[in-house]
Image (tube, rainbow, N blue to C red):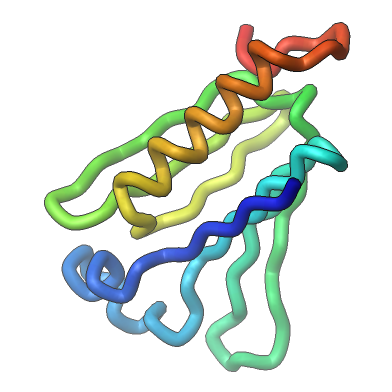
Length: 113
């Protein structure tokens, strides 16, 4: 199953990222492929920058809450993914999806150590 989340316009404006309203951060979690992809259109709106990692490399999920919205950082072995100005409920849902996947997974790796 695929879950998609995107930065909210209100959070982008309130947190000083008004220039990013046209190019919000997007997170796609694919539980079938066991991958997380964070993407963002570049400033000249021609291409998209995206970063993907597998669930087995995730070691930590950090949520930085603001007055309006929150940033999420997913740390992995060898790097990290960051998406800014998401809704607080979306960040919590992302964390819950990963934690529940970890509990119900029948694979031999743990997402969080």
